[in-house]
Length: 159
Image: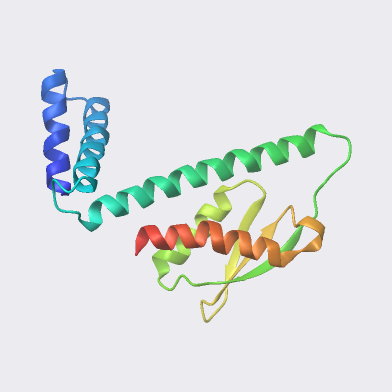
């Protein structure tokens, strides 16, 4: 299915008359959309490729949404006279097992303003993070947000 997506991207660029990165990227996205629609309609075989790319796009949009929300929260805290920060260090139990999964999760947490990955336990079962906003000292809510948000979506994309 990936090969067909590449062929469709090349066809788009040829029809468009320009073999630039932008043209190929647009062709790739349009080709993926076409293949996903054809697979959903039963006209071509459903493969893990369409589901995986869909989950990856969903993760990207989720991360961007969380990025916007975190920036708004920090900007609000900076612009108001009263600070709303309730910082703390929280240990998050990991379902991620491989080095790549743990590294990606830690990096996405760190890229989100207001959170910072600090360390992974020796047995790789806990990820320690610093969070600027632990609502009412409820570390369990923060753990649940990260486990049901970043970690679950990341593992669904990678596995």
